Length: 199
Image (cartoon, rainbow, N blue to C red):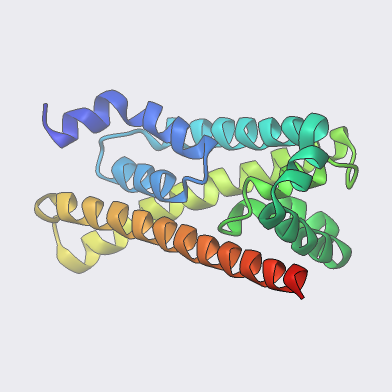
């Protein structure tokens, strides 16, 4: 099975999975694939919306029932929660609308908000609006990226495979870099906490 056939057969499922998680790269690639004719943009946008909305509502539900316990058990997440509280104080509605555009905050913001920072109905409405904006902007960015490349390079068919691999690798490297930096910061904070206890 060629990469093109894989995209046509499983692309929408991959898109749904990517949208459920912090999957901007997958959604961007789906927009690019739509430009190339492997997926249909009319389906890409609603699937991205459904995945994004469902994922964030799931984390909000988790936060509603177990949020405080999770924050107590995971100090690094509690530190992120402090950052969320700072942002909430300055940009309450804007944060709820735009958190999915902030890398590394997609899971933590709904979880923290659910611990009493916002009501269920208000979150659901603002989350739906934010998901709608995100599910239009990210796929269209991928789609128009493909259109711009086609203008610059002529027919894209001979370049599309390395381009899609390049976008995927760049997204994976960004995610890996973020995880490594987060792990390093958590370990450094743990060492500092241990040193302060020893004193």
